[in-house]
Length: 168
Image (cartoon, rainbow, N blue to C red; front, side, top):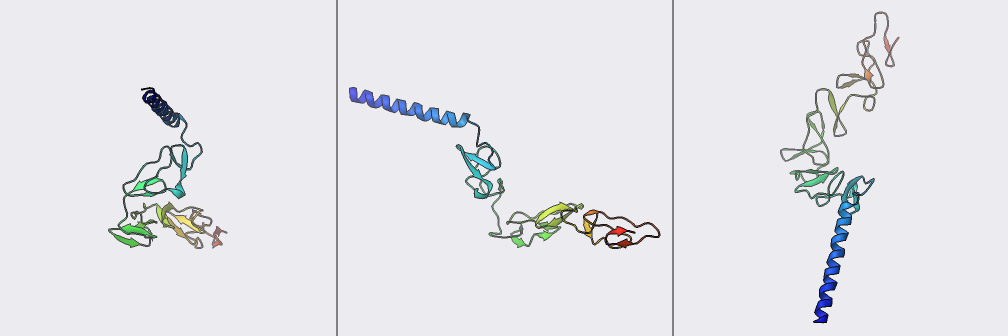
């Protein structure tokens, strides 16, 4: 009888410790300064995530498809595709009408964007050496479209010509 009573107390105390540990984990701040998701106090960085541990902040979640940059995405029908996926076909992902990477669904870029390295981006100094005419990056060396460094193209005034992206 005494032995059974001791066993009951030991199990009771162990269950209290286990419950208190779970409460402490739930009450503690989730993985401060973690670039990814938190799995019971352990940071799972974006580079190490998979469909079982996925997220950009807070607790990790399980994906029914796949995890891409901390976001749950549908399973790819293209398999291991470097470009984007359109109706089960792997495309290179560099077109403005089929832009994307890592077997994600292809995106159609907006009229003010271009597909740069698989991402729809507006024409800017980051992706254009000439000048920007809307979404189009031009060489910037004509009198009607003059400019450089990704700035907006300019029309050179009468009596000036475009030289190296500058009206002179």
